[in-house]
Length: 191
Image (cartoon, rainbow, N blue to C red; front, side, top):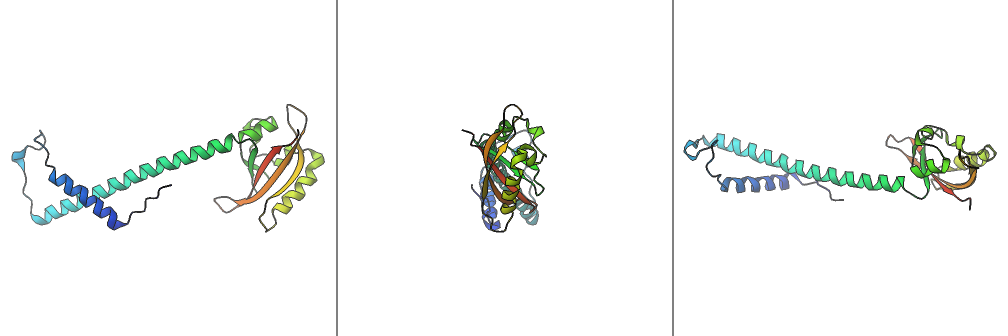
């Protein structure tokens, strides 16, 4: 992604170039500024007007760069959102208590539930009670400081069909508030 960290000198130079180009291009006569009404200002007033015009051009340049950066960020966000939502595996993020704070469409489909019935629920609500211990041990190993991914196989409950076997891959992560979270991949291995 392109970065926009022009130095103040570069920005000033670009704005001064634009100001000089505009000064050389005298507008043709129009109703607002007829050529006979040219005002002769003292030199320090002209310098102040020039500085204001250069500053205005600097701000316009920065504004254009920010618009471009915003459009690029939005495009990247859309691309990652689509990738996350349409992935072939179930993805979710768990908070420290094991509640689902983010979930993709694939995992909702695997569980046979709408997103609203998955978000903010404990992941253990969807794991077969016979496999709760397997999940618990895997999660505990995941919270150890070596920060490698851990995996296990458990049965998940689906409202529309019988339980299915899934491989869980857990990876520790930190959110934007530096709170510990767990990234969870759910792969249906029933077949």
